[in-house]
Image 1 (tube, rainbow, N blue to C red):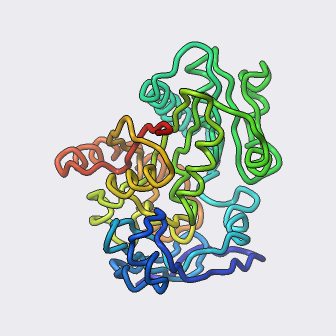
Image 2 (cartoon, rainbow, N blue to C red):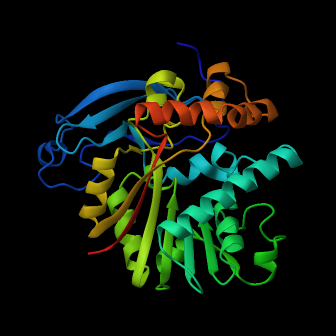
Length: 324
């Protein structure tokens, strides 16, 4: 297999073997045995972004959640995103690409608000906001809302402070540690491509549940481990994204994680985001995710959706949940 193209300069994350079920099921073989013997290896994949080697994808024999092994320790996780250098914060190389990214962000934001049945004046926490486009999209499509974006860095993502919602005081940025330490409540918590980045997703869901106002809801979007593109692209599928993606969900394991966190799932829905460009980028092993890959992602998006529709297995999964 080809070598990874990236490096993680001056950073030495620590890794450990996972020994218990990530959805917190006390009857899961991983949880009860404590040695991982209840999980089989279903695939070995490569860290194409930062060159940290190969990682196993294991599947729990009881709850069927897939997880990356070994995984970064809790202390090492921020190092994987230090300085917003990972693909989660990829900046647009030109105005056309920026417009495309904003268009997709606004489209996704409208869907989030509609699925969560929020309208009028409501408060939102976009936890793990990445490049901030999703939070900006929600602030734009729901002009009476007040949105807090949060991530590992002290400062907001580039471009956010210059945006109209930020200048108007409807969009704010908080370091994620301040969110964890606060008792602020929200009408809607957004975990868009965040849950898979956590070694203990149930604990994160429990934390987010504690930040909900009465009647509040959590919106979750994650890559679908049963996507047809995971099979087509194999090791190059961007949804694996090891070691930054700890957990790989299907609907049943995502539902189980919510239930273990004291949440009930109200809505389940298939969804798609453009992934072919990033997958081709992994395949060609180039350092820069340039304009041609973004253009390929946009141009081939109809093909991606068509394959997903025919296979009845979308690229991503979305759920809306509330406390039981």
